Length: 187
View (cartoon, rainbow, N blue to C red):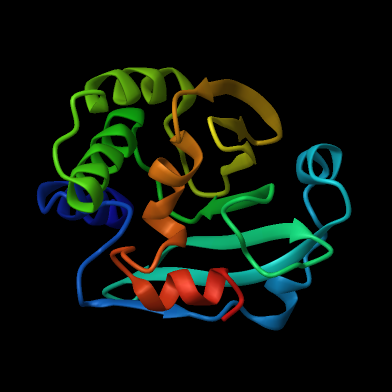
C-alpha cells in the first residue's frame, strides 16, 4: 500500500523518474557497486566495467539504483559506447515511464516535432516495472539505443541522435539531478 501511495504521489506531480530539489543522489553502498557487470552488458559492451553509480531517493524512499558501464571504465564520452542500468526499487507503469520521459525530453530540449514519434517508439521499448526489475539502455551508436528488461531485449530504438537525446535525462549536465548525473559519470 505504501508503494502505491508513493507511486501515485510521484505521478501526480509529474516527476516519477527524476524528482525536484527534495531528491538526494546518494552513492551506492560498496556491496551494491561491487555487483558484477550484468551479463547483457558484458555481451554487448567490450571490456565493460563500472564507471559510476548512484541511488535515486525521493522523500527518503529508494526509487532506483543506477550504474553506468563503459569499456575499461573509461571516462564517459557521448561518442563512445556505454550502458546505463536502472535497478528499480519501486513500481511504475509503462505509461508513467513514457510520460516522465516525455516531460524530461521537453524540459531538456523544448518541444520538438519528432517527440511524439520518439515517445511512440519508447512505448514499445518500456515495460511496467516492479521492485527488483532492471532496465539496461545500451548506447552503442549515436542513432540507436537498445533497451533490455531483466536481461531480455525489448527493442532497438533507432532515431537521429537518440542516444544523447534520451539518455541525457540521466547523463547530462542538464539532468534534473546534476549530482546523480555526475556520480553516474564517475565525476
